[in-house]
Amino acid sequence: MMRADAAVLLGALLMLGACTARAPQQQVPEADPGNPLEVAARDRGVVDEAENSSLVGVFERQHELGQDGMCVVEQGGDIRFALTASYGPAVRCTGSGRIERTGGVWMLRFAGDSGCSIEVREDAGSLLFAGSVPRACDDLCPSRASLSGLSMPRVSWSGDEARRFRLIDKKGEKTQPCAQ
Image: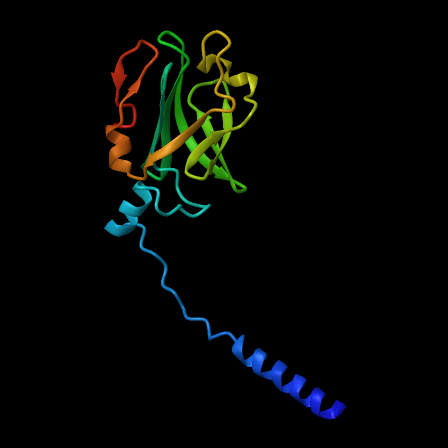
């Protein structure tokens, strides 16, 4: 009787194993990032861009104190950016420069002689600035304002939209800093 039970149990295990066998893996072609359906899906937040993607596009957040925004474009092999963060009508952090990818980290390298560089990362469709910013970046903001911990959601993956994007400069005027 023991042998019959063992044989039934062994047969059941073999049938269960056959049911869980995996189908051979099929090669799935890579998505074309320029495909209009892909672009529309990213623009609407239906799909997230891969971790190693480009930051080209527009990041923006409207709030009671104003607008935080950043445009990112590719130009001549470089990735350029311009940004504004508002802390009220007369208090704005502004800057521009180049973006570099170093060891899996995006670094904003601000133009000028200050040597200001800020680490940023993209997470869940938002651009997140490092929690602490080097003293070399103090000139970007008046008073005690800072770019540390700034967060802006992505609103576009388009370089063309980034070129048309308007930011408010230190003088309070709307400009298109990524247009050049």
